[in-house]
Image (tube, rainbow, N blue to C red):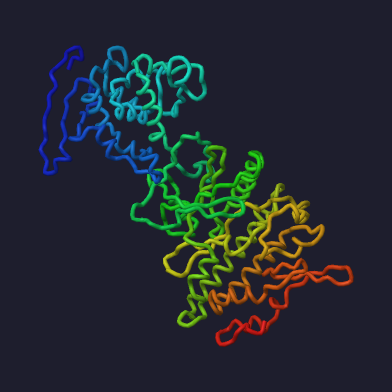
Length: 524
């Protein structure tokens, strides 16, 4: 057909049993590639409205993920929208007068922009927005806005002096500029995933107004959404929209958890000044990334992503339903009545081996031949820093070592000479050198802490949480500072000298035997 002619549009309505699947077939003179524009009964504008995702924060309301936009903004629907929703569309001097060419250009670089125009009833402005000099594409979002000085306008982030011309050409009013500015955050939502190049966690520097793809299950009334405070930061549970992340595969590969859309977001505490917070963040992230190089250890927590927003640093991890301490409280020990079986003991042995292997990996990460070999130290091993991930067996979890805020990676020359006074410590599980004048912290401090945890695990195996609690009370004694402590060692003062030894309540074989059913610790 000669393109100079303008044949009448032929509309054929196709009846189907489901009215929602009715389409309008449009035979257009610009369909040079042979495909025809298909218009669903529902307009693209209506589909966009109906497909929004409810955000966990009611103040934010809703958003659209990149995948949702991609699924909705198909070739047929975009072409139909250009035909039917863009009154006054002028292609006389652009795209060769072809709607198909404009459609393909939109799908390549203007999906988010066209969605915003449709939602704001300004779809016909898309031609000006595709201008290479004065227009806006998806990569330009988000734009900045200036309303206070001079004429209101929108500006690119990399040039706050030059207004984006397409808004002026299309004569947008101030309220429309504000609408575009507010709505852009709802479509420019980041997709969270590991780096495709090396599989490491990606860092996102986010503007203060950026919307993260957190959603909420209306049927979930769990209190786990509340933040949990720790020494270095707070941890909260979030549900990430399934179309806004790519974490299913790495979680499955780690074999630490059943697949879920729930994740843990750790927010580091501000520690006096921004530089200190930045250093805390860098140290933890560097340790996690180095420990994951060349391995995917099933008993070390996997860092999935990091981001900075409002000068706060955040880390995203798989979500564990509980830590080891709360697990001990909820579940009976396997040697208690009704649970003494080979499967349970094999599970415990496997988890102890796994945690020990994880610590060995921290202490000796990387190949032996590496000239830049680093020796690691966790620094804060305790039951609350061992997470329990759900498996297919209800009461048999995968134990995973976490919280690397105290972790340090050092060369061979410096691996054993870190002054104890510079390091945080857990009162119960601290090693004796933490209290020694001039004491130096090394990898052996981790081994001490793990040994303490395993002793408590033995108490739980034999008698459940009641025996863990009894063991704690048994070894709680008054220190030379007149403070009662449940740590595993004691300080003795004699002849103006101090000595350190494991508490007899810990080493006594009688106390260990006393944990068996039928015996008590009443004589401690």
